[in-house]
Image (cartoon, rainbow, N blue to C red):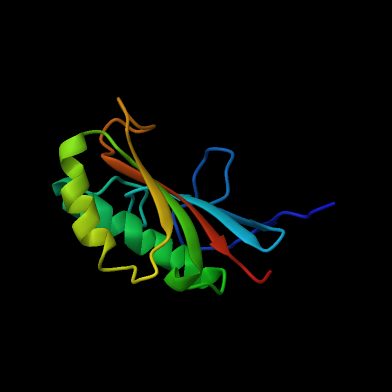
Length: 127
């Protein structure tokens, strides 16, 4: 039986029944959104939201004792195809070759209407 262990972060404590990250069987599972410490979606468009989402990811990885180098797969969700060029530009500031495997999906909307981007990430973890 694999035990799932939550990763404690300083991210906004959601009222939804979720953990920002879980480690099980040496894999970290996390989904990240563009919210600040107060739980508000950041303003400033896709670049600001992507940067906040990536900063939240780096924070979560650090809390789990993991770096961007251990990220294996990223699923990027955006609400407009035209956002992908900006997401790619910001994303490239956080990862280096060999890059994680990834998929980019254009969706009609995300959980919060003002959100333009969301990431689902899987990483190698030692916990």
